[in-house]
Length: 328
Image 1 (tube, rainbow, N blue to C red):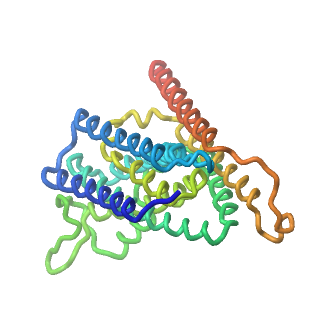
Image 2: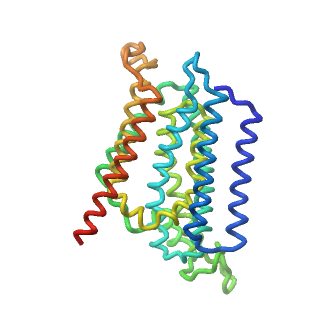
Image 3: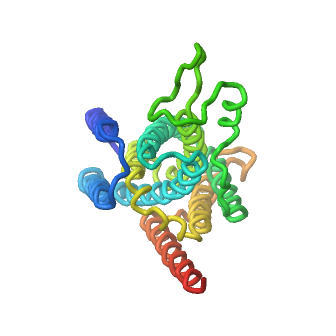
């Protein structure tokens, strides 16, 4: 896929512009958004993602060379979006654990999303360099995703405590305050500097984003090897995440089989990566450095499997949770 510098500059510029718009809107009037406001913004972001995928299909697909970059984008975007929804569970736990006032949750979420973009941008660049120079990295990516899928199946209950090790370290070795002071991260009292709860919330969100980036980047590199598509799929997956948090609300808790669905999704991509690694094998201690004659999973089939897994997970989760509610 040939992406010009102009396309990169425009893409990054639009991303920064959208973030700045979000920051200005939120900072101007901190509030809990209405369902109508969330729905409008979310529909707009999803529309932009679909329009971008169509643009990639029209301008960058090369059928005679086997190019299917539009399908790769949609497969990557759906995968990253589903993983981002799992992020929301952790966000809910963090907000509840720290008792974040509803009108301040938008700010905390926005900062968390910006941190997530930064972390994912770093991992995307590192992943691109690794893939370019070390073809065997797909073995590691595949094994990591299979292990992640196993851990999701084994431990589907999210911890109710939003304070991770980094936050506990900050509480132990720095002066902290339990009272909220709006958007302030630090305050001074009696010539001492104290960390506010907002700082701890953002710290918790940031470290959580780092862990999720470790899962999401190998997953999308299993669907496309193009850094431009990896970056844009992540950007569109994170856009609207703040609105989705308020729009779904308690509905998130009804997606009781989301972890199992994501585990199946990551396992599928893990297998796809391992097959690709075997197909392009160059490691001398595996098959004498020769490639394996194994089938590779085409992008269209990958997209179909992703849609099927996510659809079945949502339908079964909502059906079973509704039945349990009726049964008391």
